[in-house]
Structures are given as structure tokens and as C-alpha cells.
Amino acid sequence: MTREQILVVDDERDIIELLTYNLAKEGYRVTAVMTGEDALAKVRAELPDLIVLDLMLPGINGLDVCRILAGDSRTAAIPILMLTARGEDADVVTGLELGAQDYVVKPFSPRVLLARIRALLRRSAQAQAGDESAVLKRHGLVIDPGRREVRLGEQRIELTYLEFAILHLLAKRPGWVFARSQIIEAVRGGDYPVTERSVDVQLVGLRRKLGPLGGCIETVRGAGYRLKE
Image (cartoon, rainbow, N blue to C red; front, side, top):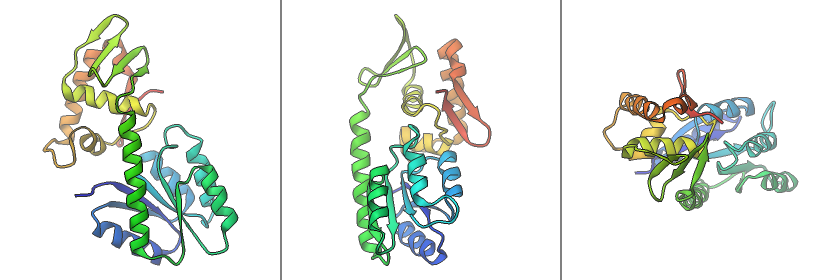
């Protein structure tokens, strides 16, 4: 069953209700906000898999939201589907140049919008899969997913499967806060019977094995965990 998290940003309640209903019916987890400021706050609090973003917003408009997200390495890879009104061709071009991946013109067909969302999520998943084998270097640690090993200089740090998976997840987006629920879904799948308390226990063991570098994994009260940038 589809479980991707989608953030809907639009200042029209009718549009939010339409999108929330259709996306939830397809199995997506949906969060909705009505301003650019709230969108940025929500993205920073919890990483969505895709953003449906209206360009015409009060305060910080959709183009500014695109610009801010594209300028942050932690959020630049999030796919953005713009919602535009007819006659906004210049804004569409600007949005695409700023990093948005696609757009749909209002009024839109929910079936067309869902098809565009599925295509964007598929491309995003393929891109992420291509990065899964990349060796990461963070805080002196060398994290090799191909060998499933972590080294600090010449020393190999022995981690369990889950400890390695959590470290690899955090290391892919240093500075990004991952909620416990996101960690569970990413490392073992949303249907795996692991509690959020189990995540905390894994982090205790991981920090202990990393020794002095264990402090690089920070607990963000009420939000989750992150690896220091």
C-alpha cells in the first residue's frame, strides 16, 4: 500500500479538501497548510516525499518557497508539483528553473494530478535508489552501504543491521531531522512491527559504538533525530 507523505500547500480550502480526499483515497499520507511560511515550517519539521505547491500564496509565495527549498541541501531533492492558474506561463518557467519538477494548471483533473504525482514519486525513488550504493564520509566516518560497513580511519566499527541502516539514513541528509516514524518506515518498512521506543534503543546502542562521535547524532526534542552537519 502506498504510504508516501505528501504536503499540500494552497490557500483555497476547496482545493485542499479535494486534494486531501483524493490523495488519501490512493493511500498517501497527507498534510495540508495554507501559507508559504507554514509550508517551510512543516517541511523543516518533517521531510515530505513530495510537495503540491500553489504558486499564488499570501505572504511568502510559491516561487519563494521553491527558491528557499532549492537553496537548502537538506530539501533540494524534494519533488515539487506546482499548481498554477492559466496565464501564469512566466511563473511556471521560473518555478521550473528554481527546481520544481512539474506543474498542473487549475482547474485540473484529479486523475491527471494523481498520475503526475505517481510519476514524480517514481522518478524520485529511482534517483534515491541510484544513490544507495554511494560511500558517505561524515565526521571522519566512512559509511559504505555496498559493504555494509563503517570505518573510522583503520578501525572498523561493528554495527547491527538496524544500527547501520539508521546511521546510513541520517548520514544521507546531515542536519535533517527524521521523526521516529520516518526512521521505522525507511529502515524496515511501514508494516514492520517496531515501536518508536525500539528506535530509541537502537540509537543508544549506535551512539555507544561510535564512541566520542556518538554525540554527532542529536536528539531533537519532540521531533526525532539528526546527524550534525
